[in-house]
Length: 118
Image (cartoon, rainbow, N blue to C red; front, side, top):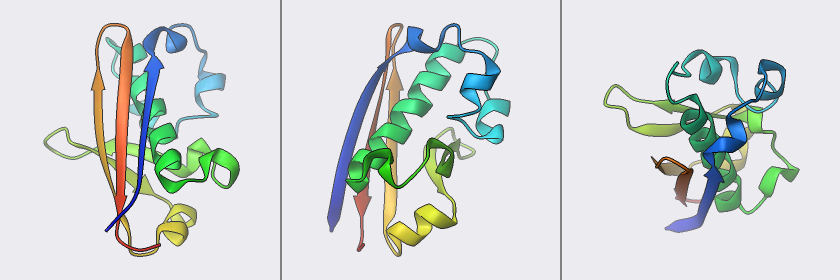
């Protein structure tokens, strides 16, 4: 059963001149270590959109979670997925989150569907 759907769009240039100190408040060390040299703006914008879409699908926003509680990773085929820490897993219980990311020159968009039970 679908429990929630979230979508978010971010202008890539919002991440064009952000310093590491700022980025470390939003992205995990692993996310930052995987950032490409070329396309950093799209990378960070798409991950931020993914985190926003996730909390929208939960229906909580960032009131009960921090952006650092949510990590966006990719499998061996480049398919993105949400890595849930203990706090997020406790909220979702036996539910799962499905993530899709897309980006163009100026914008990145992410959509999350949560299914299962809360």
